[in-house]
Each structure stands twice: as C-alpha cells, then as structure tokens.
Image 1 (cartoon, rainbow, N blue to C red):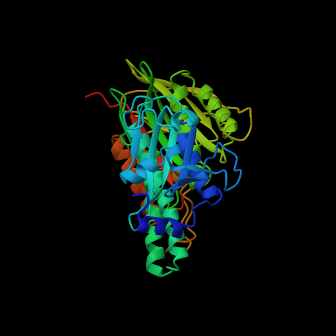
Image 2 (cartoon, rainbow, N blue to C red; image 1 turned 135 degrees about the vertical axis):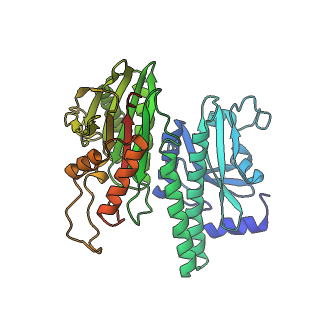
Image 3 (tube, rainbow, N blue to C red; image 1 turned 135 degrees about the horizontal axis):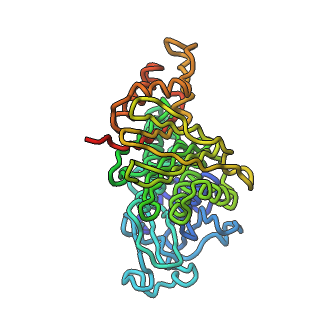
Length: 427
C-alpha cells in the first residue's frame, strides 16, 4: 500500500512532501488540541521509507532534514495501510501497537489518526492527536477530528488541482462546495448535537447562518447539568469567522463546561474563561451570557451574568417582556474583567431568551427590495418575543426565526443563535 505508484504520484502532486509548516495546517492541528485536550496534534505525509512532518505546533521548525523520521518510527502509516481511521485507547496494551518503537519517544498513551485522502481516493498522509495517558475517545471528539482531517484533505486536493493545472470552473465550484460543507459540519460539531432540557423545563435552540456565508461562524450555545440540581445555560459570540473563531469557540465551550461544576457563580466562571483565553493567547475576543439555575417549588431560581453581551429577555406568563442582566465587558482582551451576577426567578409560564447580536442587529440587504429598511433591533426582538406569548420554547424559537427572516425577506446579515428556556404552565 505504501509503495503503490498511483498513491506516490498523488503524494508528489500535492507538493507537501518535505515542505515547511504553514498556518493553514497549524490552525487545524491547534484546533484539534483545543477540542480534545491532547498534548500533541500533527499532520504528516507518508512516503515509502520516510514520514515527513507538515504541522507539529508544539515543536519548533528546524528544517526539512530534521522534520521527518522513518516510517516505522511513528503510527502515521497505520491509517495509510488501513485506508481509514485508527483509534488506540491504550497504546501500552493494544495488541496492534503494543511494544511499538514510537510509544516511548512520543510519549503515546492513546492515539487517534485519520487519513488525508486525495480526490482519487489515495491516502497520502495522516492527521493525528496524541494523549500522554490512556483514554476512552468520545464520539464527538472523533467526529470533529474526522471533519478536520477532511478539511486538510480538501486543502491538499485544491493544491493538487493547481499543480495539475485543473483550473476549470467546475473543479473550483466543487472545491468551494466541499469547503462550505466542511465549514457547516465543523460549526455543527461545536454545538450540542441534542439539547437535553433539565427535568421539568422546556428548552429549544436554533442557529441561523448568515446568507451566503460558508465560513465557520463564532456563535455558540450550550445547556448542561453543572452540579447536583444546578444547571447552566451558556450562549456566546466569538469575534470573526473561520478557523480562528472555531478554535476560540471550542476553547470557550469546553472551559465553561469544566468550570461550571466547580463555581456556581456565572461571573466566576466567565472570569476563569477570560483567564484561559489570555493564557492560550486566543486570537479572538468573545461576548457571552451565562445563567446558572435550579428548579424550585415556585418555578425556577438562578443567577445570570453578561460579558459584553446583550441582556437576556424574560417573557412573563402574562406576555410582558423584561430585560435581565448588568452590562459587563467582553472576554479575551484585559486581565481584569468587570462582570456581575444578577439573581432572577421564573414562575410557571415564564420563558427566558438568550441570543446573539445577529438577532438584534439584523440589517436589510442593500441589493434587496428595501435596502434602507430600519435595523431589526433589541426593541423589535422584544416585540417579537411578546407576540409569541403562549408558545412553548420550540414554538418561540421558530417564531423568532421566522420573524427575522420575514423582516428582511429571507436575507440574514449575520449569524444568530437563539436559546429559550421555559417553565411549563400549570395544567
């Protein structure tokens, strides 16, 4: 398999055999580290006798001659030979790799690798992550790694197309379509696959993509059990789009989940996220809103904190809409952030809406039928929420999405995320 002439021809056409590191690949390996928490992620291209390193962000580049090793000195040839992913939970005891010479030099406790595939179906390299300890890989981690490996494959295929002078419009359009699909898949992997509401509550969320934008957006939301009876709802907006925004989104989501169980104060959790972003030198800042709450005999009680984010809106059972939250500063810029917890209560029939600015700063398409139409602002959003009086969480989110779409004739100027929590009314 390694010496297959067609595979080697595809590898040569990629132009990556022994080439220097590039940011487009380093961004993807760093994102893999952020998502999995592993110490090492790498992209390599595998020949018949040597494995050439393309991206190993934890190591300084020291030249083509040193950025390679023998094929048998790493696990990277396994996905080539298997023509598919190879997942190792415990390297020391897995019969496929037990005693392998790469375990000690690279400190391999667990390993997950996915092949880099050409459009012709040839495996030319591997994207992998290494954990120093044995671990049980989660399904969402492996799905994200598979998406990232496909993103590397797509970049390689674009370069092969250029090297072979395939510049026909159809080829470019297909590559663009694949990039868009990968972006959407990556965005979906950074959101909860299923929103599981707390017992006795009604919850729903919706992500609205900006019209015509194939980039990975920076809006995210999450709903999870923090500790005991306490649950946490989080919604945020990372500045910008693309891989850089996705890296910060992954860092924020996993940091918030990890810290919410230790600190029931949303302000404390958001301060810790700010510290983590500065420590990781996150390339983007973000705004966020977090609510930590528990069920009570009267409905719901909790605390909410804003970090540079629009206020939450509570639609009371009688249809009144009230903003909740004290304005705070955004995260990822300064070492000290001013954020404040605000207590709130919800009775049967009340609903809380968390949203990103794409839902309250929606602008008209300048090429559309009403280019000068007023912006859909916070007041318009509050009126739309009041108009959904009586609907459950899912119905409310769908009503708001339809209202936004109808306001500007189906054209969305920015991504928008919506998350609704409702205390069901008494029978």
